[in-house]
Every structure is written in structure tokens, then in C-alpha cells.
Length: 321
Ligand code: BTN
Image 1 (tube, rainbow, N blue to C red):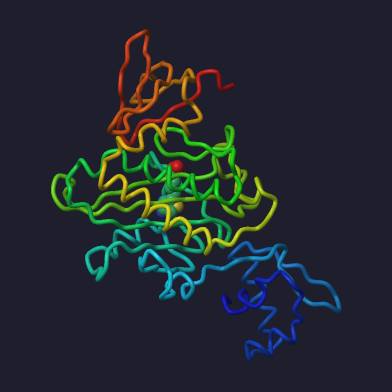
Image 2 (tube, helix red, strand yellow):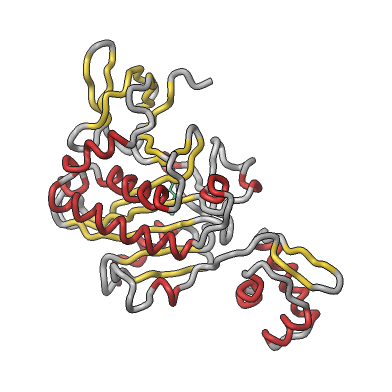
């Protein structure tokens, strides 16, 4: 089925006969596979009499050879899957036997994509980036400080470089355009954070997401394609992301998050905004002052400055109707 999809990914018309010849199967078998592509993967295929079949939109499938080509830097091994429960879960499973770290996992689709705070991450086939990078941390807790914010900066740079210049950050690590979510980050740890451990940096970026996700995503969202009006090649995005991550993670490692504190605040869409911070049952009302040297959010709460950090916290604009 994937071989057929590869032939169709250019978005041009292909006759059933030509597809059958290329794959060494009958026209009836081609038709059966086309049904499966539509039914199982939700891919929309148009059929026009006399011309053949074409995808509703061209597709750039993930290309393991290109991602692992010898000239690519940084030399991080790519594990490429067409389907996985969650790239974070797969990355965690691969750690014990890994020959080389960093490595990363990407997939065409996730059947159990994980979001922050126990939410699902909608992960349709072939449309978006589902990416998990594994790093070894042997500098203890200090090296983890502000890490998810640093990842947000690297991701934002990739997004700006392809032309979405209005994208910005929302503490702790969402990327938004206006009020619409474009990307999210989920860090998961394996091992003892006080000693040697591994961190999985999970990134979900809406690239060519189509509207079929609209009902299932519980918040306003956008995609790179929605912002730019063109289909993007996820392989190029992955290669750019690896380069930006390498650059920002080196700053974090050598100088700590403090070196990126100002840059992060400059890109925070909610700087100076009145917010409600959900931390347990009672939301804390305050005005965003910025982030501290460890990446915690600083709020003015009734004239007093308070800092908050932790994976379960989330911010909401107070005037959001
Ligand atoms: C969020 O809720 O904002 C974080 C979403 C993180 C989703 C990504 S997709 C790749 C990686 N694998 C997962 O299961 N989750 C992360």
C-alpha cells in the first residue's frame, strides 16, 4: 500500500494500468489498495475517467534515506515509521538498546499520540510532524532547567524560517499564531534526573493538517500550510529542526537557560498579559512579567511577584471569551 502511495505522492494523474505495471499487480489489486488507502489512512483520492487516479493534494512522505544521508548534519540517527503508537513511547522503548545517542523517531502517523496533561495528540497520516529526539543528560537537574523552553525557541526558529513570521511562544512550550495552536512539545524522562538520565523531546507540528481534525482537536489550531498556502516537505522541516535544536541545545548546555531568557521573553506572545494559571484546583490570577533564569513563569499576583514551574501548569488569557 505504501509503494502505491509513493507513486501517487506527486499529486499527478496515474492510470490504473500504469500503477499496476509499476507495482507488478493487477488493476483490480490496485483498486483494492486504493480503497485501503482511503479507508485506513483517510487519504482522499480522485478518480477521473480516462485520466486515472490522483491524490487530492501532493504528499511528501518521510524519506529515511534522505534523513540518514551521510552528508546530513547533525549526524543523528533517524528511526522512520509509517505507523507507531507514539513517537515518544517508541523513543523510550529504544533507549536501552541504543548504540548511538542522540537519535530520533519520526512517524507518518501516531495511533496514540500523547499531549501534555494527559491529552491526546491528533496525528493523521502523512500530514504533520511527529518527532521525538532522545538526549542523554548527565549534568543532573540543572541541564533540564528551561529545556522545554529552549526547544520552543529552536522550533520557533524553524517555523519563522519557512515564513510564518507571526508565530510566537506561549509558556511553557506551545507555538501559536494569534490564538491558534501550531505546535506543542512534550518532554518525558527516563532514569534518575538527579544522576544520569535520558530525556525524550517530543514535538508535534501541524504542517499540512487538513480540516478533518477540526472536530477532534479541542482547541483552535492552525498549520504551516494554512498560514503559507503551500504544502511543505516534512523531510526538509526535520533536517532544519535538527540543526536548530543542535544550536540551541549547545547554548543551553554550555551557558544554561539564562543565556536564552531574554530571547525567550522577546518571543512570548503573552508577555504583559492578564492570565489565569491553572495549578491544581484554584487558578492563580496574575499578569505575566516574564520567565526566570530556570524557565519558571513570573507573574505579578496582586502586586507581588511569584514564580511557578511544573509540567502540569497551564496558562489561559483572562479576557479570553
Ligand atoms: C502538547 O500537548 O502541546 C504537546 C504535544 C506533543 C505531541 C508530540 S507528537 C510527537 C511526540 N509523540 C507524542 O506522543 N507526543 C509528542
